[in-house]
Every structure is written in C-alpha cells, then in structure tokens.
Length: 312
Length: 290
Image 1: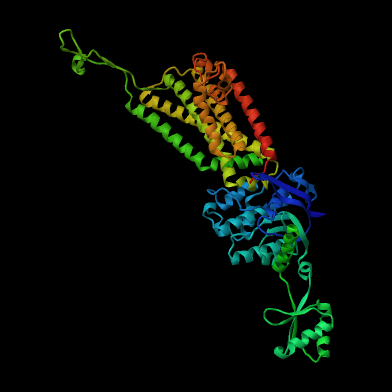
Image 2: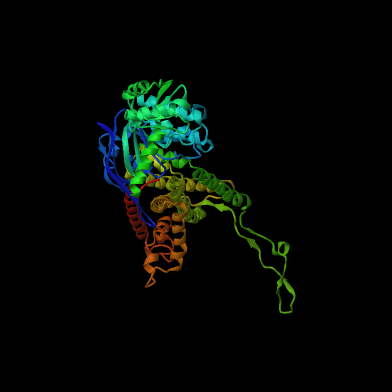
C-alpha cells in the first residue's frame, strides 16, 4: 500500500486576472516507510498539494488517496493515523503550549501523558507551560511538530518543518525526522532547504510550476545525469594539453574547469579507461576523483530545464 | 462529545469571555450596592420645617411662596417589584453580548488560523461546525443565565438588608424563571446566529456589524411599511429580541422592535438559526480553510 497517491491533482484559483493554476495535473506516489522529500521553489505548488492531501483544500480535480482512503470523502477514516503540520503552526496565543496540545488531543481522546511525551520528543518540556505568544519562531515550529506526532501517526506530513529554526534546531528536526522514518513511519516533508532534504530523505520528488518533474531515490537522482571526474596531474602546465588531446583521441569529452583542473565526462565504471589512455600517452595521473553532484545541483538542473521547456 | 468538550473548554478559557464575566459581575455588584446603600423609605415631612422658599412660584402679589412638597418617594430596593423590569433590560443586553461572544469565538479561530490545526485532528467539517455553534449557544446561554441568577441574588440580598421583600409567591418565582429562561434562550440563539454569520464572513467585526446595524433598521422601518416592511418584520434581531422580552407582556406587541406574539418571535428565531447554521455549514464544508 502507498502512503500517499496523487493522480492528476489539479488546483486552480480564481484571481483578479483570471484563473491561476497552483497545481497542474500532479501525479505522485509516496511509498510507505522512510522519509520522502517534496522539493520545489516558492510558489511551485507544494503547500497547495499538501493542503489538498490533508483535506484542508477541497476544490480540486484528480484523485488524492491517503493510506488507501480517498480524500476528502474517506479522510476521517484514516485521519487518526495521519499527523500534519501545514505552513505556520497556529495555536491560541494566550494558552500554554501544553494546553493547546491538550485541547487538540481531547477531540481525539488523547490524554496528558501522550501530550507530555510529544512535547518531550521535540525538546519543549521546559517551556511547555509558557504562553504560546511568548514562544520564538523555532519553538512555535516545534510545537507544531509535536501536534503532528501527538497522534502517534503512521504518516506524518510536514510542510517546511525547519522554517525559522536555528542550526541546532534544524539538526534536531533532522534527527527527529530520521528517527521517525526509522520507526517504520512514513514522513512526507516539504522543503526548499535542499541540503537538509539531501541529508534526511530516502526519496524525493521535485515539483515546478505545479508539476512533478522528477522523483525517485536520492542517490539515484544524484547519480543521474552525466557523471564527471576531475584529474590532477603532477605537472599541469606541461601535461594538461597533452592529456586533453590523449583523452580526446580515446573518445572522452575533456575540458578545463575554472580552477584549471582537467574534467572528463565519464562514469565511475569506466574511469580506469581514462587512466589507461593517459598512461599510453606517458601521462601519469596524481589524482582522479569523481565530481559529486549535490541535490541542489540536480534541483537547479531540472528546474532550469523545465523553465527552458516552458519558454519554448 | 470530545469535540464539544474541547470547544467548551476553549470557549471558557478565552480572555473575552472571562473579561465579560468579571465586568458583568462588577456591574451587578455596583448596580445593586448603590441603591441598597442610598435607598430609604417614603416619609412625610413637615413642610414648614424642611421645605425651602420656592422663588419660582409666587402669589398674585409677586411674593414667593413655600414649597408644598411634604413627602419623599420610597427609594429602597424592592426585589418583588423591580426584578421583572431589570430582567427585561438584562435580556436585551445579553443578546448583544452573546452576538459579540458568538462571533468572536469562531472569528478568532479564523484570524489565528487555529482552525487549521483542529481540522487536521477532526476533518469532519460539519461536526466541527455544529460543535462550535453548539458551544457558542451553550456558552452564551450559560453566561446570560448565570448573570441573571447572580444579579437576582444580589438584588434579593440587597432587598433583605435594606429594602423591601414582598410578594415573592410561587407565581412570582415562576415568572422570573421564565424570564431567565427567555434571556438564556435568546442569548443561545444570538450566539449561534453570530457564529453562523462569522463562518460565512470569516471576520468577527463583520458579523457584529451585521447585527448591530440591524437594531436601528428594525426601529426605523416599521414592520407594516408597504415596501420595506418585510425587511424589518423578518429581521433575525426582531426574533431574538422577541424571545428575550415577551411581546405579550410588553403591551401586546406595541413596541415596534418586537414581533406581535411570543410564538412569532420564537418561530422567526428558530427559522433563522436553522437556515443560517445549515447554509454556513454547507459553505464551510466545501471551502478552503487557512
């Protein structure tokens, strides 16, 4: 069973200048278990898609399923198994953090012990009895996460959970997400903090202009595209041109990067062919290392390609 | 029931509700203490001794004459005679208080965005809507009833201490209980109506303005006016006020802001409550909540 399944989800708003498409036939499958990252630039449609997924937005076309239940019709059947934080956490400012959670939990028969456990999990115990209005942005965010995990859910949907958190806070959230994912839960987390997603998620989906432009395992996305290696030689001024010519003759595409290092397009499985070609030209390498791409590189590549395609 | 329980707790914990309770108590204490302390029995006095020369009244020769006032009114607090009138005024005031409390309850949730958090726990919108409407109604009814009972109790104590306690027979008690019931019922309906209008408009102020503007309208436009009389005749506030004050006991409907009969007022209010709660619920169940 999949945790979340979106099929041709389409959401448009009527604005002053006509209809604005927020989500454009988005199809996405989130498998159960692990941490799934939902990436996109601001305005890409992440939050709108999440709002439709958790039943806050009801005017859409397409099909949305959460834990096998159609949304919004059968959402109440599974809502006890879903925890969510959407946009900014909103609570009563004059109530304490604990009281806010107690009132939320009361609607589902959740008691004080579970509330305290959730507060402890997000590290808010010392401020649990302070008014919500006195919380910093990071503390409010943590209370929002506590509200999401209060139901001990199978599926946790978090929209930008690291917003407003300081570096230690971000690290704590990352650890918490990993822990929740390792417990067999499905964590669906949207973010534009790409390095965070890269460190936290097992799988990602990238959306742009309301459409999914890529999805899959993080390592597959990072390994995708053209693999490159950087070559360092013992005497670059004398050997660089010789090496480049030798690689060209061997059928490799080689060029110099801005730092003056020789960069050759080749994947790891064929890197030995590069060293052999150079050795045959009496050039012996000091170092050959793969150029790893970050998720940021992948994201920018994909979104730029999508933008270029839309302009055409 | 869990949802209703949580909403009632939210309602009671709100600062505006607690503030209104404290303010109401303060007003009741002051309103009873002052006449209790200052009240005195009627007494006949010696005109020569106590009355002064009234220069505005002269005899045919133009000479000022002594005032002929020889007695003073009984100003003591009298629960038996006064409470019925007090409850009428209080019931009208409680309707307007309920409009504010009912509108601000869900209005604050829209403003703060806390409704989003709640809908992530209870996605059944109708259930949330009805629970909040019931909370507004129950909360406002309890507030009105409590205030009436406290005020009545204070007036009774004041009458016992320095006033008149006469005529408190079974019929009197029964009529006062009916008055408290009417005040509570009108407040409950006002709270629910204000909640419904706020759900549609999503602003506390908008709902309050709608009802507060209605008051001069139903006063200005006579219900029998050939063209616009229906606006005034079927205005929800007319129904609420007619539930709060018995039109039959108020000069047979001579007051233009009330319905002709008590039953008419109750029917008008019930219809408005049902229509507005249903319409706002249908809208709420389909709309996006932020």
